[in-house]
Image (cartoon, rainbow, N blue to C red; front, top):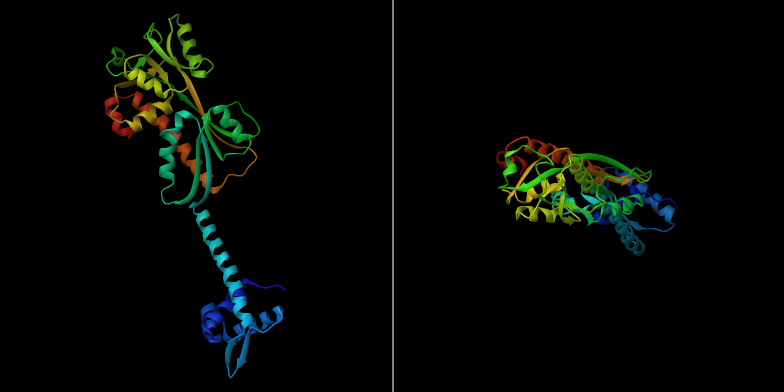
Length: 320
């Protein structure tokens, strides 16, 4: 037995209309073609679906039962077609994203909010993890996409790396805001907030002070830069901070809250990466979001670079 969807659709139309001629019009075929198709269907299944008398069709009890099966099969097919249409238009599916703390509170959620507009059936799993954990989760294909500090290359991960310059964060009324570039000499003896000792930015910052023979005073050791913004705003310290944290702060508080941002020299790098599994094919929704994320990361660099080269008060609305 080799039933076709066209046979099932034609049988359903005959049952709905009670007429070969009306069913023929509904399926866009000739009346003889529909009659032949119904006869062929009966031959294949081995029993009559209709009693034919005086040119009229009367469904058999078996036809009523068979109609239920046809409705179920065709209904599932129609639902599948609608699902495939939603998937092809990026409106359906699932996207699993892991991101490091600096991007988890504002940057990634804001980007996701924009991406999900009009995609109500697209399910998203978003978790915050440390960069080393994200690396392992992507390598083992537990998540579709990771956004983290740049790891060492490995075959099980594809990565796009972005080298982002750190920014000096000062209290808004600090005399150093008169300078466009702040150096270790300017910060000699000032209390500093830095990340934990093993972190690349902490190593680079302390090395910059040593290279100029300048006294480095660590007051706060942090896991992320975000709480450091509060300490700087309160005048408790200054900080050399990554761009993502600075950008997220500006998005959340565009009128700024007691903070000023200036270039720091020598440059301290905070490299971030977009990670995807090396041995898995990315979904269409994943590919589309990655494209948006790449543009957003480049946008952060461009916006902050422009802000650092301009009077800060003039660019607050630009960054919004």
